[in-house]
Image 1 (tube, rainbow, N blue to C red):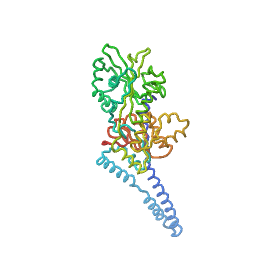
Image 2 (spheres, rainbow, N blue to C red; image 1 turned 90 degrees about the vertical axis):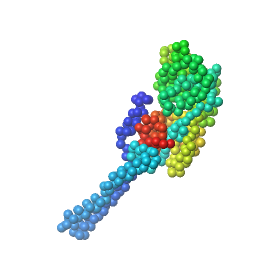
Image 3 (cartoon, one colour; image 1 turned 120 degrees about the horizontal axis):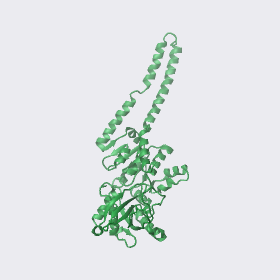
Image 4 (tube, rainbow, N blue to C red; image 1 turned 120 degrees about the vertical axis):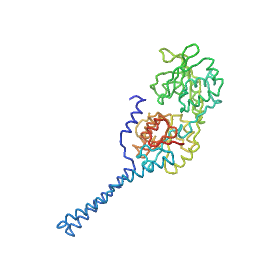
Length: 428
């Protein structure tokens, strides 16, 4: 029942429940019509033969056999086999010619009926090849851009080569000699790391200095780095408020810089530092260091793909954990609607009807939790009766991929996303 365990439980539940595909349900409706029509024919034939040709007298056996022959002939016994063979051939064609692995045949049936496609942003609609824009780095007080990069580097995991944010931070750090000099002169060494959790939106590292003392550095969503209780208290191990958060002018200034960067399409990462070990009891002093702007451009073919989907009558909704302004700017660049609503609006809806209307009308959602993505997919499926697809690549996309009738893991997706998906793309 924990926030971390719930997505796994949802995925296991999805996999254990047998869902009849829309295509199969339509085929069953056709079969029911055929059987009902044949029953009417059988009834008519039996009556005609029995009453007009004295079938109820001397040749009752022939009359019954005629009725049974019509009944048996009307049931398409081989239809399930023919459908499965054709779908298997289609799956083989997708794998051979389009580098797409089908893990669920029912999803292959539903994809033709898909009306709405929900999509993650980072790594799906965008390249996930992030880069830090050094000349737009924003720092507070006496902190410098080099210190900001140094602290960001110390909260990164060099072993996670598939993490786009850590990859960009490490690349920027390696290109900045002044940041490397700070690390060397202070003899900073990362001792341990509390990895990123999509629920708490931050990473916390514990760093040993040259004098043997331990300092704590945090990296993540600006609001959560300034005050971990922003948007509601989470289950993070370390909780804090930076000293400056009590100053209204400071909060407004940081928020303005964050909003300005996000409106220009930059993803912002905030850094805060505590010169003591925040794991120990006692009062700890946290300082806000600054904002790190990152650019994640859309894929070159995204706009064309969106246009093709819309031409085919499939509407696309973007669902991202990034800032609302970043989502709106990305949506504008790729040809989607820019009515991007915050994930908080889903969670805080006053009624079920209000939430359903919001999900149906919005062009997308930003600053969402993994549970919000799943909620959007299930609402569209269960409340509006449409066939929903979901594309994604991250662990936080897995619950929504599992809930969708057509879950699509894009190239470079994590193992969690692949295991939850019905279709795995192995090429961009």
